[in-house]
Length: 107
Image (cartoon, rainbow, N blue to C red):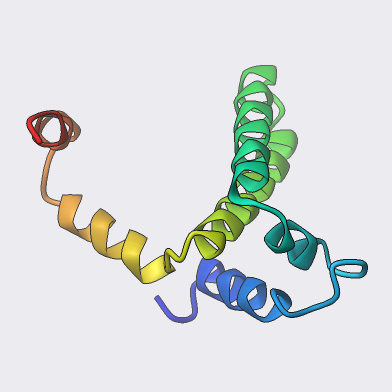
């Protein structure tokens, strides 16, 4: 997965953390608090859902890209790596969604 675009984007986010918040949107987000970043993820999720029901594939693609970017920033801000998430997804791969949800509910 090292060449996957989400991996590349996460690496860029990591490098931008030390940039000047006045000139880097990523640095600005990361210099704030997790609550602000989480709210931005929520805003982008709503915009993505609205784009889906609007029927515009172009808008859905654009909003999905915004959502993924902000989600990766949130992961960085909370110390989660892409590998952490990929490992979780991999662990769920051979399990149905219902089985996975039942397993979470029983813990």
